[in-house]
Image (cartoon, one colour):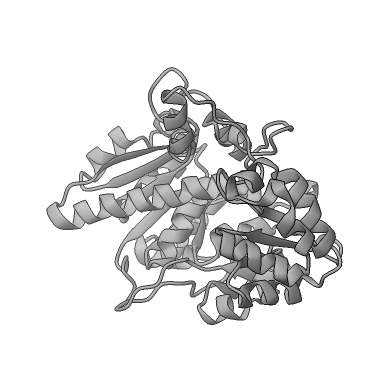
Amino acid sequence: MKPLAGIRIADFTLHAAGPFCTHMLSQLGAECIKVESAARPDIFRKPHPVYGRMGPASFDQVASNKLSVRINLKDAKGIALAKQLVGSSDLVCESFRPGVMDRLGLGYGTLSVLKPSLVMVSVSSSGQTGPDSHFSGYAPLFGAWGALGYLTGYEDGPPVEMRHAMDHSVGMTAAMAAVAAVYRLWRIGIGGHVDVSAREVACSLAGEALLLAAAGGDPVRMGNDHLRMAPHGVFRTRDHDRWLTIAVRSDEEWQGLLDLMKAPALLREPRYQTATGRQVHRQALHDEIEQWTRKLDASEAEGALQAIGIAAHISCDMRDISGDAHLRQRGVVVDVDDNEGRKRAALGVPIRFSKSQAGMERGTPRLGQDEDYVFGELLGLSAEDRKTLMDQQVIY
């Protein structure tokens, strides 16, 4: 049995951050019912030509394992139907701009009267309250607003925007908060409203830099550099766009690297005699090492470095991840059915339990594919009632 078996989620989230939260919860066993409509489907169902993807691959990554129903939230009867679904659920998740759910008649104040034990998780750009709460936002904004963008990039370059890693960090944080709220519900029967701010999640990941700034320091972008270790970075290899990470932690490892490189001249170089010297002159040292790595096969160099105890690995691309035997064996990468009859690689839940299960059991849902179960079995609507609601474009 999965840890959250028996929990039902009415999922009003969209895009990435909110859906990733409910995606994680569904893999932990919650029954997640995604609410959309034909007029307003989740934008991730659509192709992403900007990213070079003409199929809706992003939707597979955040919606596999969910059920799908259509409810027109612009119609009063649709709101009534949504409230019925909420009444049969333990958890409501949404990621609209603050105030939208209230205007629809689905805010926590309304729903908690309908179901006092309800847990509601709201994911937004800057939280449900405060002077900036009205802002909407996407992943790059979250990282920029939370200072992670400023801290990311090379020292001589501009800040770098954070994309999907930011969305997924927010979603994972929201999932953790949801589990805590559900635990309280199970323990003492009290629900509540969980307010997750993407901007605050970003800020929480910049704690070390904030501490340095508070102490009078000046945090700067460091690229792949390290405050103490050098060489420490990502190096080109023989093949196009194939990169090798290397991190040298001690004088002994430095000696081992030079032995492998057959570069005794570098051992005698005064600038590189100490760890401090290597760190100060790290760019010149990086160039010296890259002259060596550019002649090498990345996999062979990785193995040779690891064999002498140096931390090194290929910088994996998505083809590496998709075909990785270790990740496949552990169920991190799984094949799911998309809604067009094809198989796609998708990422499972990155958690393992010794006495229970987690993971995906179904593929990507077609829009409205689970309405017989949700509207018929769960909510008890007759076939005639459902047909009437479809004719009225309430179920649409």
